[in-house]
Amino acid sequence: MLKINSENEILCPDCGNNYTHHTSVNVITRDCEDGPGTSALSTYEGVSVSRVEASKIFGRRDVIEIELWCESCGEDAPKKKLIINQHKGNTQIQWV
Image (tube, rainbow, N blue to C red; front, side):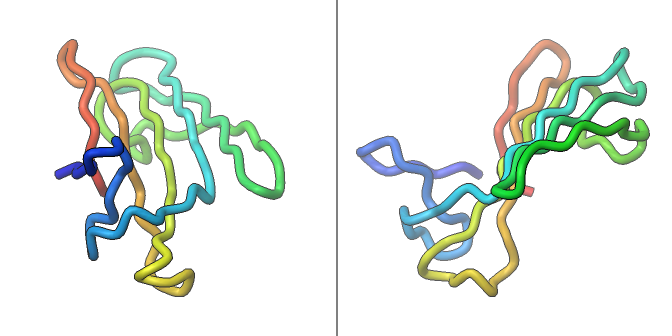
């Protein structure tokens, strides 16, 4: 479940800290529902565009994946992935 504080800052799902940092943003657009798609991944190293198999895409439609790390958990802790996806006409947001 996504938690935010009174300043509209996203809180770490593991420790509740508000000092999170983006490391990458991946926008995946499917060719059709449940089909393969195209990924545009932006990181500190640059942008890459690639094709993605249908089975590798979260959900049934387009997806935005934001990878973050938390200052309290540390850079060596597993990265957290915030997913914004479409499902049956709704837009969902969740940690994966």
